[in-house]
View (tube, rainbow, N blue to C red):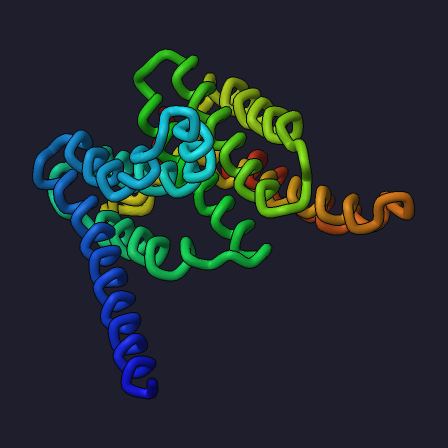
Length: 260
C-alpha cells in the first residue's frame, strides 16, 4: 500500500512538473512565434490550440465553455496582439510580456480564491483593453467599442460566476456597457503612454477601466455583505480614492508622448 501511495505521489509530481513546463513553453512560445513570424495569426492559433478542451465539447455546451474561459482567452490573445504591435524585432517589452504570460499560466490562473478571481479579472481588463485600444487605433470605432464590451462582460462574469448569485446576466451586461461607453468616449482622444525605447505602450483607458473594475467589484461586495444595513460611508473612502486617482490621470497625465 505504501509503495502504491509513493508511486502515485511520484506520478503526480512528474505530471505537475510537465504541466508547468508546458505552460512556460506556451508563455514564451506565444510571444516568440508572433515576433519571428511577423504576424499574430500563429500566436493566436497557438493560444487557441492550448485551449482545445474548451472547444472539444458538445455544441450545446460550447457557448458556456467559451464564456467560462473568456478571461483566460482574453489574456492569452492580448499577449499575442501586444507582442505583434510592439514590432517584429525582440525588444524589452517582449520579454516582459513573456514573463507576464508565464506568471499568469503558472501562478495566477490556477488560483481559485475570491481575491485570486478579482486579480484574474483585473489582469484581463488591463491587458484586454490595452490590446483592443492599440489594435483598433486604425480601425472603425465600432471594433474598439465591441471589444471593450466583451472585456467588461468577461471580467464581471468571471467574478460573479464564483459567487452564489443565481442570475448575474444583467450585472455583467451593465459592466460591459459601461466599458463600451468609456471606450466610445475615449475614441476622439486616445492617450498612450510610452517608455523610451523599451516598446512598452500603456493606454490611459486601460488604467482607468482597471481602477473602475476594482471599485465596481468592491462596491458590489460591500453592498452584498451589508445588504439592509448598507450605508454610503461604507464605500465612500475607496470610491473617492478611485475617483481622485482617475481625476489626476485625466487632468495631469493627458499630455501623451504618443497620441493616437
